[in-house]
Length: 165
Ligand SMILES: Cc1cc2nc3c(=O)[nH]c(=O)nc-3n(C[C@H](O)[C@H](O)[C@H](O)COP(=O)(O)O)c2cc1C
Image: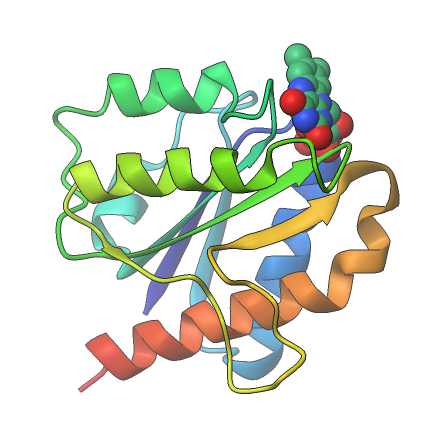
């Protein structure tokens, strides 16, 4: 089982969120291979991506939308086949009313166009509050560590349920 986490981070908050997600996956499912790919630092590992059963996309909220780097990646992804892969999204932002929902929905719409199977990341517990995806406030991202970990665990659990025979 492989899970790719493709995201953008300029000032490190989304990077940290991606690490919490990875921690959450590996704490519960240590056999899963997780790869974090920050589009600002590297080209994604397309072989790992092709072999991934799930792909989690993350972005800082820019003008209540996804970052231009992630949009650019989607716009150049014609030859990258994500059809049938499980997909989930997370964002970090300055404000809870700064357009987190619109940004997540934009990412999810792009994933739908890629033929992905979309999942909010919501889990069993009542404490879960990912109605459409995971959200954390950039400047106090460590306060959302537990939620991002639960989100990661939940996405991995769904991927295992769907794809592990
Ligand atoms: C160009 C730009 C636009 C932004 N627009 C928004 C916005 O519309 N709403 C919001 O809540 N935060 C906005 N922010 C704040 C970032 O989303 C927030 O600081 C985020 O956690 C940065 O992530 P990073 O540290 O991974 O780069 C903006 C930041 C930048 C640089």
